[in-house]
Length: 116
Length: 155
Image (tube, rainbow over all chains, first blue to last red):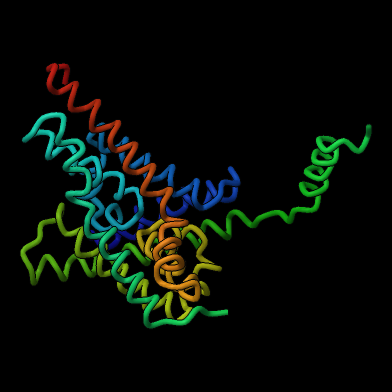
C-alpha cells in the first residue's frame, strides 16, 4: 500500500513543480529553491514527518525532504545543546545526499566523457 | 527617441510573448506525475530493501535511499540516458533528489575538460548551489525561531 501512496504523493509534488515551470514560468533553479524552502517551513509546523509516515519515499525522495531534514537535524541538536545546535546540527541528517552527490560527481567526472 | 533601449526592450518582449508556443500544460503534468511517481516508487523499493536487510527505520531510511538514487543517477547521466528521460518528464525528473544529483554530476562531467580544480571543483555546484543556499538559510531561520519559541515556552 505504501508503494501506491509513494507513487501518488511523489507524483503530486512533481506536478506542483511542473505547474511552477509552466504556469508561473519559473526557472528550474527558482522552482527547486522554493520547494526546498517549502519543505523547511512544513517541518517547522511539524507537518512533514506525518507525510513521511504516510507516503514513505513519496515524501523522502522529492527535493522538499532536503529542507525538511536540514531543519530536522538542526532541531535535534538544538534540543541537546541549545541555540548553537542550530548551526552545528544543520547537516546531521542531510549529509548522505550532499556527500553522495560530491563523491559520485567526482567519480563521474573521472570515468565519463561529456556527451554532445 | 523611439529607439531608446527601454522601448525596444518592451516591444521585444511583446513580440516574444506573441511568438511563444503555448506549452502543453496538461500533457507535461501527466508526464511529470508519471515519471516523478515512478522514481519515488523505485525509491520506496530501495527503502524497503534497506529496512528489511539493514537496521533502518521509516524516518532514517531516507539517507541510504538518497545515496543509492544518486548513484543510479550517476550511471544514467554518464551514459547520456538521463537527459533523454528529462526531455519528456520535465519536473518529474527535476524535483526528486535525482534531479539534484543530475545537476551536480552533469556539471562535473561537462567541465572536466577545464581541469579538475578550476573545472570540476569550481562548477560542480553551479546549478545545485542555490538549492543548498536557500535550503540551509531557510532551515536556519525556521529552526532558530522554533528553538527560541520552545525555550520561551510559547509552544
